[in-house]
Image (cartoon, rainbow, N blue to C red):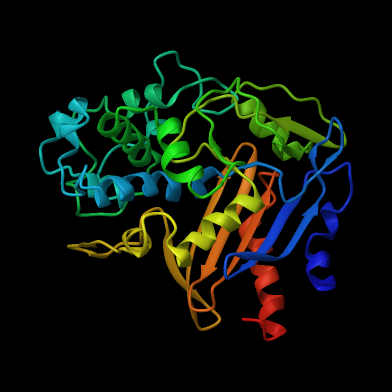
Length: 351
């Protein structure tokens, strides 16, 4: 895999953030590499066990909680959101759980609404999931009638975590540990709902200490000196649902393996996660998943980005092959790097 190493050559040094890259075949890691460091203070190498913030890859885990409750008949995708979130009752009964899952709710994105304290919606500033939800539900009207348009919004998945809590009677992090992570032996995976929590083997975020980064930071009131090297970027706000899952390459292989083995609630779980709901304007993607194609094969993928991370995961279900690319450089463009690796595999006749 020398050619793959070449894709990440710019990060193959201890004084740089980097990537964890893995290829999973039939639920087993058949290739894994770590490039660069998870923590530049100590030059801790990135490994198979380094825990990265998954950013929007977290959405499929939030969706998994909904799928499990639906399979247990504790919840229906057609239930009105107001049944579980009374604050949403002003939007009427047409707003259903399925509209949150498939991003067709018409709800406002939280960061499009000004915070009461006038601070930026930026993860260097502290805010919680509940503050974000409260702001998103402040407007009296939806952006559009539920089910009539697609509009990407993290608010949808934040609300799904509240629904899980109100149906199960447990904090979302507890539910996920008991019902998803522990059954799959994903012991290096957790919901980061407390910004003071210690996360073993955490990949700290870093961006180049260049004019672009410094300008963006100063735009939200964060001072960084110009110079060589890297700027440390900490995720200080414990919002979750649309993001907030930390996991490792090792554990994501276990998550991928379940797609075929059905260890978690059998084949019905995978079927539920892959279900594409139809609306008046067309069929939507799966639950926290995107359906696409590459090199003549159907794929399921999703990407994520936040202050501390860039992530991408793509599954080729017919080939039972999945690529995972995780970076602690938010400008690292994990999806683009994964595409370069896939191009090499295609050229070599492996996909």
